[in-house]
Image (cartoon, rainbow, N blue to C red; front, side):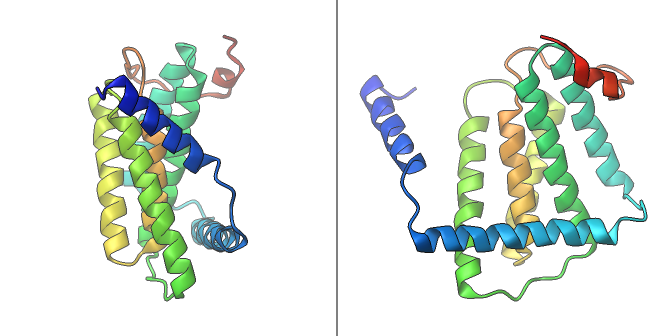
Length: 197
């Protein structure tokens, strides 16, 4: 644990970076990157609209949905939402590999993607290494998302790299702050969303 002075300095630097005003060029690059990501998601959805979802995707999604259900039952709604956000990005990343087309994109978009990719992995590491424990299942999925992100980025499959890095970042926030147990045979249902705290 860093000394209090160093921790305070780090927190101030992080807060300043978080609240730094966007320059117009930064905003344009961010919007360009966001458009790229949304188009990628739409492309994936269009290609799988007939309902052909690979079983490898369904297995991870079911694990994360079951973990999220356990979090809901324990009253930890934020962790449940983060786990499901991770499942969403995992789905897009994995399904994108089915249709992987390495994008030929310009330098401006490449720079914006690289910046976002590095920031997502930095935040994922920071939250994952916060001293809280995670279940073995969640740790395996998290590590797989990080590995997939780096591999996709090296192969210039930028959409998949961003989705896997977003999955890792979301899963790092979804780490439980108590005993995380997957209920055997648990299925997620609509009634779980009406639970009261």
